[in-house]
Length: 505
Picture 1: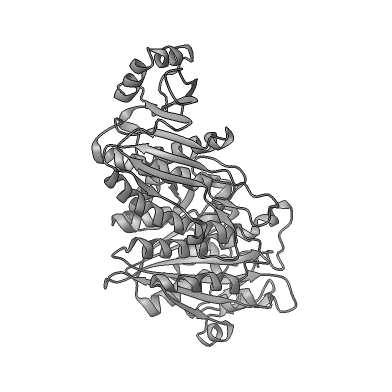
Picture 2: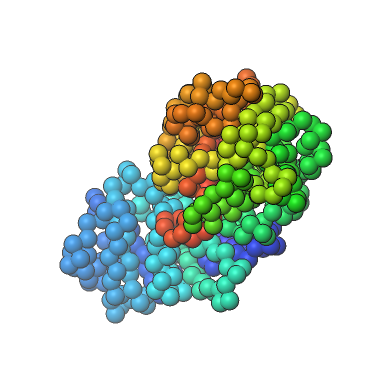
């Protein structure tokens, strides 16, 4: 029996963005011989039964072709073969999986994204993929589901501003041993990718259209999923003493917002995810220069990751208590903006001298962390932010930085990241002495030391006794080219990482 999974952009629940996912998936126990392209896998060990069966059916032509191509089955290696006359296929793609023991769900997702991009480039409309002999029964289901997941993630498009959107569609049929098991695994991934798409669209949208209020409006649409949404406006923020968050938004007409999205799937103490939501970062009076300022619409990617994760948990009906606290503001220049040298009072009671107005992310996060602790008493608190250029200089955009003194949480999150190709690399927590100020309790930047570390040390002052981890995803929020599971634009980094971690622990 065939099971069809159709994907729709309407599931994004974000009316301000136009996204499309042009891929249909069918999981079947029979090979679809009517497809244009056949994809068959081949490991370095060369043990693939289906390849051998097809080779025999095609009078040895597949084996001769891969030998001519010097094909060895290395991971992501592809031999493209014009299909033999006995076949209804136009072409056969023999795809290397590397060593069988190394081909896991993360590598399957990457492969799905890259094979999908290849098929789209070749204008392929239908593809049949054999997945029933790579490894064990349930492992095959997981691999096939993640391959489809990767293809769909790569296919996601933000085309609101294009005159001629790409409407090409690829329809897939997967030949798997257990279609029900595969469908069940894909259904969970489909819920997670809905959260990824939301985060991507929020991040990719231009700053004038994705203001703090528009971000809040997008979040309000999630109430239909059983998510409780609470929003604090500038007056309420100020009344609660959150002087840092209030001040950063003071330079824009809308001011700041504190957005809380609570999915309570259990009665356990909540896990609090704290997101930096600077919808545009001019740098304030410490203004940014150069072409990089055009990317500053993505300075709210941490908040987008948090909201996307809460949505994913609601769609998967996870038995988790997750609260997302997002500190929203636009860091703009005006007569009411915070000036270098100003002193702000945080809700924690600590005063902060603002030496650099472009170090605003840690200011809004400090009050958001305080709010999460005071009103939700979380078991664990994780903040995520596009926080420092120093992180990019240290790690580039292939890794996000993870900083904490909690070895267990660092290990759990790092492992989760490896499972979904959202990799983390640990940086030290220290240099607190560099945050001293002559006129306040703290300076918002360190006088010396590595910037990513001093930013984390600043935030540690607001973690209290709660188990806490900081993730600096600067450089990970946007990409200009498609690669693996990523399409150009917002990456949705953090949603799959957090979802994997929450569902596994």
